[in-house]
Image (tube, rainbow, N blue to C red; front, side, top):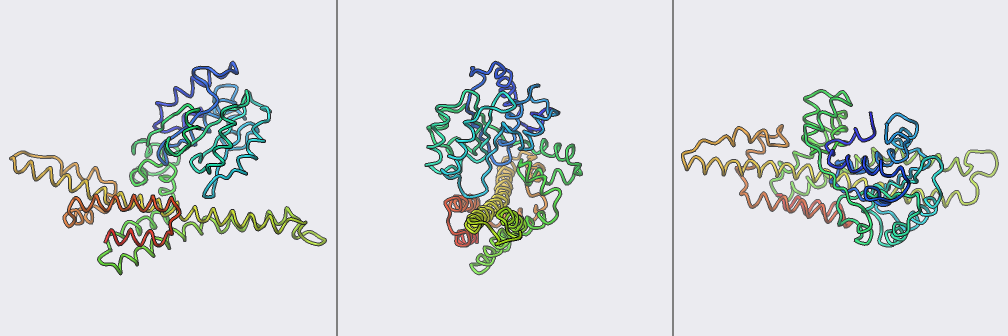
Length: 401
């Protein structure tokens, strides 16, 4: 299987990447091959997967065969000439970029190119982005930059103007379900459910399909707005949602944090015979704790953001039912037959909550549904600007009440 075969629903960009790989064999910048690329697309579209696959194809002697040692190590993140930058904190700071620039100045050690894949270019601070701009403006003769971001506007104009842009799209539900069945052995029914509620996010669909606890947590979250009847229940729902997000983040980070701390302490001599950790060990541990705290904060915010997107699908389904009801009413008034009601259930993302969705659609006026979706999107924006999570979610739940 070649490296580009894992890109689900992205056939429109594979041809451009393959042409660039072919053109790169002469070692010069051409119309097809350039030194800086920007991959954009919604979460789950596979923009970082596309960038890593492109990096593997560039250093593979067989244009991305997927089986050679270069392809396998590049895809696994262990190739000497492929630098993959993943941030787990809230931002990428200038010190990290300066260290990166020192490393990428080296010549390729194995392949013909030195490739840098930055998965979260949208998290660059302004000073870090400006520091990286000079390297993109004056790249090394054998260096290729592959930046990933949700949209063009998430990257500084000076950087995006120097990159070739590739826009990925959200894979279809059928395409995601087919991958889950073929690659992961998921049953067709579960694959359809996971692909549908993940809205084309391949990684999240897989987690939902194989993890019952994640499905249970999502079910609890989806029922929170349905139980809001007054301000008191709104505050209770907000506390529950933040608690669930914090619990999920802590579950993912606790064991990892402990392991990282132990390994770093051992590296500085803790547990060895003698006086204990070497000079500077305590400072290194404090720096690690700071990074872990930043990572935990981001994980809570990411978990809340995912939950808000799930709740938004509930009101999206309500809006679909209201639109179908309006269409049916107009057709009946005109004496025409409509198939909208039969197609309505098929268009729902949350088919399992169809009865609750229909009841909510009958109770809410259409303009109120739109206002609630706007309130959810506003809460997501506020969270991205580091607003206090609990206060933000409480304000949202009051708006949904």
